[in-house]
Amino acid sequence: MCGFAGKFYFSPGEKPDQELVKKMTGLLIHRGPDAEGFFFEGQAGFGHRRLKVIDLETGSQPMSSACGRGVIVYNGEVYNFRELRSELEGKGCKFKTSSDTEVVLNACLEWGEDCLARLRGVFAFAVFDREQNSLLLARDHFGVKPLYYYEGPGWLSFASELKALLADPEIAHKIDPVALYQFFSVQHIPAPLSGVAGVKKLLSAHCLLARNGQAAVRRFWKLSPRDEFSAPGREPAQERIFAELERAVGDELVSEVPLGIFLSGGLDSSTVTAAALKQSSGKVKAYTVGFEEAQWDETKWAGAVARELHAEHIVLASRAQDLAALLEKIVWHFDEPNGNYSAVANYLLCQACQKEITVALSGGGGDEVFAGYTHHLADKLVDYYCRLTPALARKALLAPIFAALSKEQDQAPGFRRRLSRALGFEEPDLALRHLRFLTIGNFRPWMEKGEFIGFDKISAREREGNDPYRHLARWAYEYPGRDKFNSLLWLDLNSYLCDDILLMTDRMSMANALEVRVPLLDYKLVELLFNLPFSYKLQGLDKKIILKNYLLKKLPRELVYRPKQGFGVPLQVWIKGRLKAFFLELFQGELARKEDFISMPVARQLLQEHIEQGRDHTQRIWMAAHYLLWKKSFALN
Image (tube, rainbow, N blue to C red; front, side, top):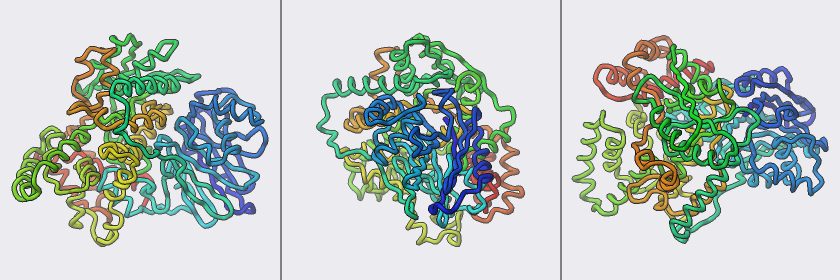
């Protein structure tokens, strides 16, 4: 993929500082080490860093249209560009390259914002229209590709990563208290906030048009109204999904540089590998990275899947020698605080694979669209419990029992612990109950009492007005179908997946100049999946049944039904051992002494309990550490 940055003035009489745009672009070199380009004309200044994947010789950016009207900087891949190109040529459009970049540019000039819903792929881009004196920013359907922006008085700065915007001296290095309150509640920063005051993430499936002295953001795509309960029978519905899935994977095998597939041996990556082998005319290479900690090593299962599928399997070794330095590097690449410490494993995976390939297909998004998380199962179980158990009995008798169980199970497997707590929730709203279950392990219990973030930092009224649970629940409320459990998948897709998982995947892959594609998030495939009732995806207690049925035609049952293994690192153990001194210094040293937004005594108490008392506070310790290192990395106050 690529990275870009730029500045645009609403008035044609003002010009961006060329050295500034070059400096912003230089901070994105990791995203595009192959080439650099700039465009400066009148009110617009663009910079671009390129990772060459398609049209290696003529695809340089910024790119101008053959007619001379438009200029684009672009990050992404649009897989239906050939069909769109044929249609545009029929309208008289001229092309000078064979790239999808030029197709996107001409589509914008020909159809305006209406073209965006027609782009099948992942993208973030900026287009300067000389005739209109306008700037168009756009981000793909599910936010796979990042795009940040800041609107100043009469100007816009924009970039693929927040760090590039912070090079602009007109943007203050000031934290956003509301964004951080939401982060410590739900373990990521929900869009459009970013963590820095005034800097916004463009929402997925949205565009921004700056013209005639003002900037307007609008949504260009959403699900149409649907009745999932009128879907065809399970078997024909599955067959259609299988065909669309294979089409999506086949589309994303296009590359002029070495390409492979991340294979963990789990359902998602095994499905992508199997579909790729069916769609590819050549060899398909599947990559697995081995870790020295046996609990986290997936090479055994991945090898078994590769043998059954007859895929060429490459196992790479990875070990971080200096974990503390690696954590600081990961925080710098992240740009914003994030609670997902599987980023460490993802960084090491991408680092190892980049030595062999430039493009990787992954199974990202499979859990969200095929119902693969334990919290999807919990949603059903808790819903049955609430409907079948009288409210008085739940409140007076059962809730206290489940609350006690959840405390005793502090070291129990995550699902049992979380389910015990969820059964103790007296929350009638399905979406809010779902979010509370999903974000167990945050700082909410301390924040509600003003102990972790004081009421002098964010007042009770501000907290109520910016409650992250209600902010995220809107995705479930807007869902246009009848199946209430599908509304929770839609919530996960537009919040946790977009602002946590995909953000992490983008940063860790691009930190290593590796393009990662996510065919299971092809928007046509996703639209089809949301035409089906939730029971077609989670049948009884059987999660991801569609993918299991697809793989049962290709793999032994014991590989399809093996226990789910999360992809991560043993941070819980490292905090007590290899990283103990690092975390003690971080929570007690100079950074901690200067910290005036969160309560370091609370953080230190959690660290002490984790190290000395066997309590598991891994999630909270990581969140507090990420926040402190983030402020240090970007000199924020």
